[in-house]
Image 1 (cartoon, rainbow, N blue to C red):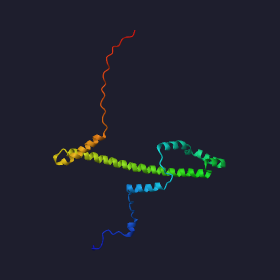
Image 2: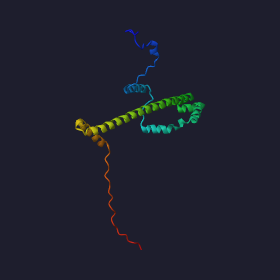
Image 3: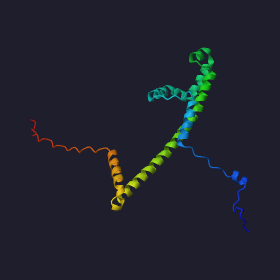
Image 4: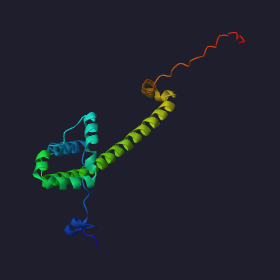
Length: 187
């Protein structure tokens, strides 16, 4: 028998804690704030111009060759003259190499994250374009009827904006016929 205070599907505290809770989605603004906070904690992360990046890439090609790096570390460790000349001992060069490899993983993860965010935004833009095209098409058809006269200015404005966004077609060039020049045979 059903009593007034009895619930049909009681939830015990144990059941509520066993159910995985969905992770809250972050807003774009919250993510930007977190990224700026992370960026401020990385003192070496200073932006460069494209020319600076190109120059440093061409100079640092040797650093991607593991054999050259290992031999260089051995060379630096051989004598104090070389370690003083380069400003690092063998352990310092090893640590710099290790840091470079560890930050390369961060770089890869950031690229993957950027690709994911960019891809999701591309999908959103595609959805917006589909909505805009569908709304414009429906609006065009409905605006032909007197009962939907309020749509006419909106449809006209979208039509104007679409025309404004397209590049103008270049006028077709008409070739003028070549003048008739008598050909004289050579003797």
